[in-house]
Amino acid sequence: MQAVILVGGMGTRLRPLTYETPKQMLPLVGVPMIECALENLARHGVTDVVLSLGYLPDQFIAAYPDDVIAGINVTYAVEPEPLDTAGAIRYAAFSAGITDTFVVVNGDVVTDLNVTALLDFHRRHDALGTIALHPVVDPSLFGVVSTTADGRVLAFVEKPPREEAPTNLINAGTYVFEPAVLDRIAPSGRVSVERETFPSLAADGQLYAMADAAYWLDTGTPHAYLQANVDILKGRDGRNVASIVDGSWAHATSRVSESATLVNAVIDRGCRVGPGAIVERAVLLPGAVVEAGAEVRWSILGPDAVVGEYAQLGPTCVVGANERVAAGSVLRGDVRLGGV
Image (tube, rainbow, N blue to C red; front, side, top):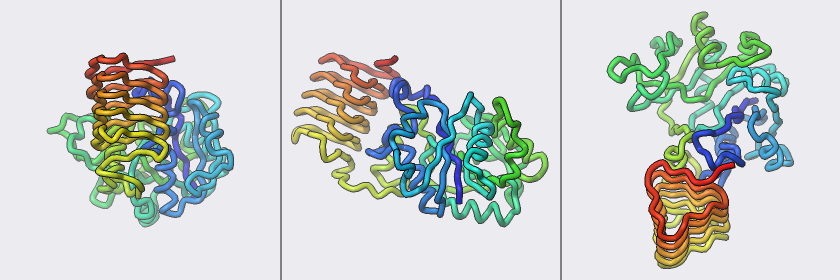
């Protein structure tokens, strides 16, 4: 079984972390996000993946020189120009020589979706395309997908008022396609799978959708990225993370003072947390330092960032690589430090 993983986005909502690192290479409890995505696919029989790359492609290629991620054989398709989602899928699929049913996954989504069940549903309905759907509490924040009782897609409604939404099921970013779908995508220029390919398939009665209550989270914002890490600490996505102590995880090479307090914290390799410091529902990327008495809550520290003594960071601060927060500072809200 083959799959296309879309990882070409620039991750603008996670800046400054993504100025020098592609979003899908950011770690979730110490493991790059792209590996988390492929681990789930491997559990469901996917053996070969093509990464559709656009932004900082060399970082993916350099990170996996043997062309294997999570036991899956990987090839790379670097877009010659921005092609949007459908264009990227077509380019990647042709680059990899895909000629049979294949899976497509948005690389910034964390999920334990039962891909085997999605494939079975797709084949039972003899569909050209099948979308995994996920229920949400407030559909007004998303595009919702209405279907018939047997799963045939009727319409896409973008961000409807909550009280007018025909359903609470949204596109979960995992699809199954037949190769014939590729022939419906223009061979050049930007083409959107959400705005063009899916509506065209639905109009012809060839698009189906399967609802699934699996764990699902789009990690595209600082809040969501933090939530994904906390959820993994709690076992929500199916990963079995070793060395979680009292709800937090610290890499073996990190140094955490005995008098520091960790609450649902992720402390990556080479980090240091000083005496009396508090790290709560926060992520420290490799080499980050929280000095004595500092408090870091619901925030992200980039690689080798330093929070000075008795500084306070509150929801939702993002400190870029090699940045320093001055001792005694108080930062609250959507604060971003660092950049190109």
